[in-house]
Amino acid sequence: MNCAGLSLIAFGVWITFTIGRINICQAGFALIGGYATAILLSRFGLSFWLALPLSALVSAAAGALIGSFILKLRGIYFSMLTICLTEAIRLAFLNGGDFTQGSKGITGLPQPFEGDSPLPMYYLAVALLGVGLLVTWRVHYSRLGRIFRAMRLNEDLAESFGTNVWRYRVVAFSIACALGGLGGSYFAVFTQSVYPQSFTVEHSIYYMLFCFLGGLEFVSGAMIGAFALTILFELLSQFQQYQTLIYGVLMIAVILLLPNGLMALRAARENRA
Image (cartoon, rainbow, N blue to C red; front, side, top):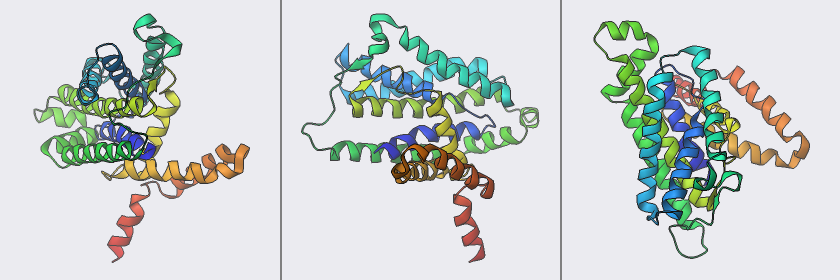
């Protein structure tokens, strides 16, 4: 279930890559989605099935508002600012007083399914993963996706052909944030709680690594990277204190040896066939 939820959030990072921006603030918008769901459920008594899409919309709106300012930056300047943005969002919820319950977070959230079986939440995670994959695939292979790729190659040239570059940047970032909010909403209900520490800068870095490892040129790259890294981390748990060290060394080795990601192996095999 965690792999499916992580993949959903990482799809948003992958979409931001398509316009040539390295997004390290996805955890912040996942946190917005998680808190939006928690507040809608606990304070307003809404059904989870209404809170889920509303949380995605709240994250998308926040992304559009913030993105309209920060997307003017490029390269390392944008990346550094997104790191700061993740921490700023976390601190905003930490100091939100009674509205966000501060460091105590919001707990005791009801799950949408009755009974103790985890299977319904598993099926929900798979369904949301399917939604995320479908949205990412549809965007990538549509006219919108072609515009995004043109912007990544050369924004000035794209603008010279009449493309409203600023508007399409905001659209891409809003879609990315909506996917982050959707994943954050799911995790809030799955764990029945949300805290300022539920999503941090460290999580944003992992979402970015999922995309790199899976392959930036492939729609399913974020999903493949999320599953591969999550499973690998669990397999290394037997090494205890050396787990993180071995995990880091293996990630560096894979990125160096496979700069186009794990999906490039499949593409190379198909080309040979």
